Length: 334
Image (tube, one colour):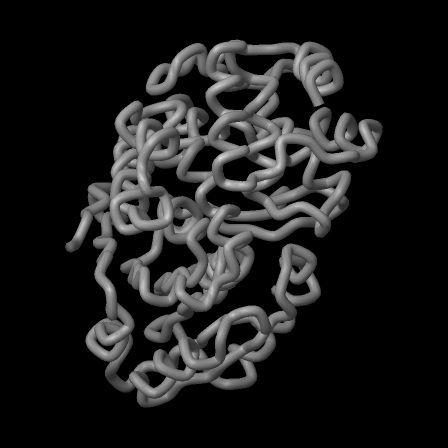
């Protein structure tokens, strides 16, 4: 199956298919240089499969985790590419999760003012969300994703078979982002989370989540308005992540961040899903650190934050909200 992201000259296809890694040669083959960016948490077999499909491949391996999404590693990748003779006809491909895709995409965006970028996400979180939409960047100055660029990929390869090597907690990490899509935009998907065979429905969950993401990105590529819906749970979630990473994963922080931003009825339904899947519904964190991160939120607008609220599954509202109100909700419920 191929889903198309229609963005004019920036459009691209997303191939979703078990065994999709076999298309790497067709996608990346030829005489150009290919910079593969992966990390130590990704089974080497996936990067090796991509490398073997290319005539001139170079592999850069990051340490696993958000901490590697920094300026020093970005500079090292760019230096590696320069020393290896990369030019505007060459490309970068991410083989890994969201953090890997963020820094690899940003390197492609800034190297020689932009070269081709491809994404092969190997975590459920990156397959349902971060591999699509063109947001790239690094963390700096204690703020998540504060330096970055919009860089749409040339193509995205999603192979659900690679998820077989992930532990259940990492699967749940991705499910949290899919649940975000369901809560704001897809009540039928929310129904799967509440009553369906969640782990037996990963292919459907990936497809439905991406259809939500694509529709939003096509309408608002650079987050001028509608795309803010994808931030549901993230304003508080990023604050929690800043306070307790790496003890909690990104998706787990988003799951916690959704709870204060919805109606009581939706909150109870979310808590039921969390209990069903084993997603944490609480965690001790430093409220001062979380508060500081929220106040630095990049989505702020004239002293307000464009916050996403959900009063029933499939419906949302974006409201300009004072940071103090968001902090109050966080502290009263979490």
